[in-house]
Image (cartoon, rainbow over all chains, first blue to last red; front, side, top):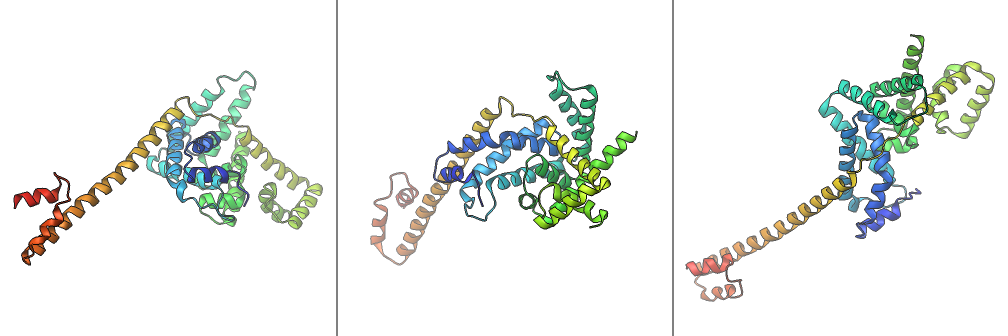
Length: 186
Length: 131
């Protein structure tokens, strides 16, 4: 399996702690956005990204560099997914996540000079719909569309079979589509 | 292939996860079927929307906090190793003392020489002084 991160992982395992900074810079924003989309809470997402890096730093000495084994990106996203789901279950505040998602969306849009109000409203609707998806559907869809992971890689992250991932993504897309259709009818 | 079958395979087709022959069959069907083509387009649009959602970046304080946490984690790990070494030294000293007690009860006086090389304030020396 061709994994571009393996050289950096090998350096870290050989004692070069500064090589970890390379991985941090590479994955900080992708992880932040993935966790933010899962949880809807920006502050929580940043705390969880910190936790992902702390745990991966501890576990990297045991990461197996072997062809055919999971890629580093899959491994780190798996840690991110598990931490996010644990936190979501712990907090169980879906409605608060939605409110935060709206607030965050407004915040993100503050600096924009282009884009109509209708577009902004539409994006907010999409974000709400995504947040309302069942956790695994949401995670599978995000990992596929935004992160570009293959079904096999997503299966590794979510600890499901490839067929299950195909089904999750299919149902997620159908759910999003049917809710968007309902909004358009209203 | 029937439209109902095509619609159930459009999602993995969109993700390039199908075998070449199946993908080709679906591509040919889409060319000639408006309904399935619209379905395909609708799912593509959803993906486009998700990719257009603005990305956020870590805060300015992120790296500072992470470095602090990593250092703390490192120190805690080093303290645990040091603690285990200290416990091991104490354990070794206690075992030596117990061994000497057993040997003294056997009437062997030369066992006291085992304590001569212990550090001045170690448990072995302290025990020896009490007796």
